[in-house]
Length: 266
View 1 (cartoon, rainbow, N blue to C red):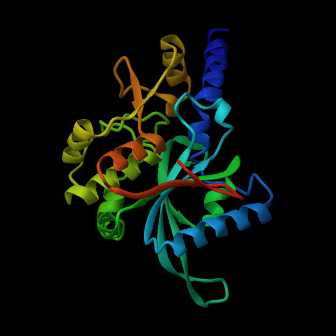
View 2: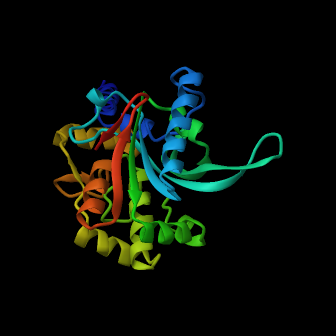
């Protein structure tokens, strides 16, 4: 009975917090109709290309926002890099490659760095709604260098937690890895201790409100829901906190949202 209660509590917590993790997983197939996903993915690509963007930070809505913790809208964040792409027929074209940290299927406590296409990125979307940060031109240059270097993989910690504390290196989620790469680009270092010191000094993560008892039980039953790297208050990196950091420090050229029929201010 005790184990049943623990598991039931973890399931209830997962419905509130866990969608952020599931929303950061690689899709086995599109959740929404494939044609709609393809049209929307192409809309985002064309918008970025028309703006001359070489690298952007893009977020997707992987779960119903009503199920997410307060202050969280998007569940997965990745870099979109304008690249040469070899198509199925062997021809070489241009488009955006997506650089993701995905929670591992069947092993939610670990993650992998995975490159895929815009369609794949939105295949796991609950709703076709993208958050976009276009870094300023100078930061785009620096990001491209880090993403193309061994530092990009070196900054990956495969031990995954939904609510990883970005100020420590114990666990990591997709937004924290994005933040680590941004910090590496700004400061010209892949020294993780220095990056975490800079994050602690300059980045304010999103506070996540959790009941203390449920918090402990959920982490016990589902490793990816651990908050062992936090003190009394749980704070994690989110797309919104990344927006606030980059705009406050003059690092973002433009921040906005795209839906199937509109471009909106964030």
